[in-house]
Image (cartoon, rainbow, N blue to C red; front, side, top):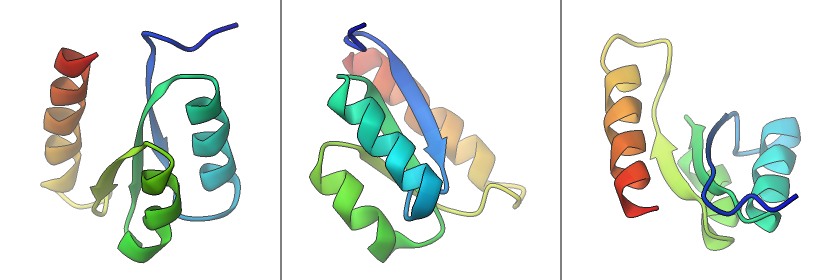
Length: 77
């Protein structure tokens, strides 16, 4: 199944399972927002086409920033 036209937010995308999920979705054509606190770790999935989100989703302000970024990605798709 093609992921064209679909969008996903992947948390923990800088390493491990989150990074593997982000890569798989990108390979399937999904527009991915890769979220993590580790900016350096996100570099590899960003190089593969993900939109980066560096922040802490447990904080009060970062989840709102993520929603705003997602809305922007949705408009581009």
